[in-house]
Length: 639
Image 1: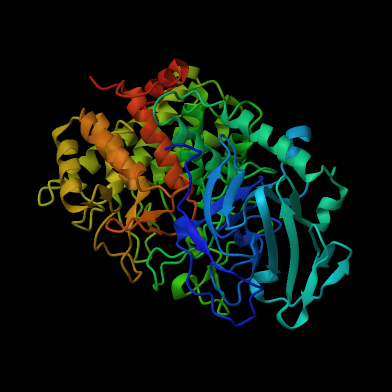
Image 2 (image 1 turned 180 degrees about the horizontal axis):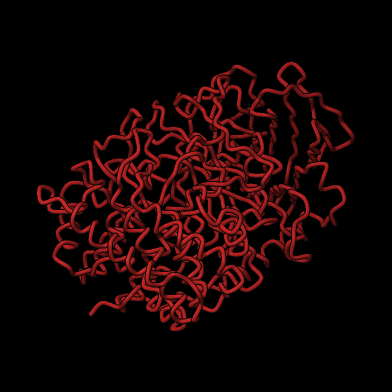
């Protein structure tokens, strides 16, 4: 997969500003969208040049454009030729700058969309949300371009008034600029701007918040250059080498786009309520930081060579864990003042009429015991690789480990946040074992104080209980929970955390049962028909497929793993992005997009194949740390 792969061509009909209430012929496929961002927020841009999702000022702010959730009420900002055209897309190599090429009868125009990141590049911080910059360049012939902007602030619940100032339109704390004067359609709360470009000419459009007025204002051309240089320098730090370098870098760039720069927090996805089942109720808000996802992200980026000493992410993770050394929450808002309270937006139809549309996430109040293993594993690996000294927070870590020894017997809601009641989930128990194993390893090597005898005793007790109560003779596999005879793809990770050897007969049998019952067309479901408290069927999970790849590698079945990985790469969007789920027969992407868990899995699978000596290479230093840590995409080399 190359960063410069052209996207699918699509016909763009003649369009004028849409009237409120007019029909939007069809919802764009989720995989049709590209994403741009700058460390504060992100926008989804369709192949027709329309920004159909944007929250300003932060990822978790109310939406300004949300046509992806309601084609009539949501709002959008489009730039496209006035005449019919074909379009193709790519990212500039090694960047998050999106290029859409429109080919018309009379000429060709390239639309470059990006968020200005000059302040990060120059000041190493971005004190305000930054501008969206959209530059149209005519490369041959003559092309008339039209921009239509229908802002719908606060999830389309706030009405606007426009003020025009030459080539600017001001509304609700935002300033929209264009190459010519904006026209206002007050009845439909819409703005329109038109221009005609000849070969070699450009037209620039920007959208900024009132907070950006104090920032240094580069010209769009200069902002493009600085932003390009920034992304290329950042992405070039990748130490993975091999045939999948492009997709590893694209996944890393996607993860970087989901990082909230002021704090280092990473959102699970920049969207809310993109459905796991079209027309169903599996619609969740992912604009928060899950400790689990964040820990996996740290591991994936470190192993691929990213996150230097100046990166704030790990500091955020440690600060967050330190705030609650016991009873860690599973998800946090990206800033303390934000709310995770779940609400329903009744005014939105939802993507493909999938209701309810949710903001906030009730899972924040759940207990999911696996997060202790995720946090301890991330700290252990960062320590092994020389990126973090755990000594200053050892007191907090001791509290966590002591808490685990007292609470590993508890029931929880599990990795998948089921809403069907708490149970003894096998994966949660194994990750509690992993938390203790990591903590013991750190304490022993660094000679740090703690109840090592108690930690070892409880670690071994967890191991014995899981092997006894977590195994199902009927399934021939580890089961989802002590109470249920169901397969769960999460248990594929038992060998990657060294809970059990990758070639242990029980692990091999679990892999084979998973391949038989959870895999369709080379893609893995997380489970089938498990009690979860939510109606509707879902697609296969990208991250579960990558876990199966890793489990196959650990089992010594590297040829199978490689075939499955190549099949998964063939299901990426035209721009190399992934939603949370894939419909196996059609390849349709489902769920929030792009999804951090999916891109973490892609990086880990590629790096695992390299670490196993099969295809590609990774930094020897990082591989040695993974061997010592014994988890994630690396772990012990296969015999």
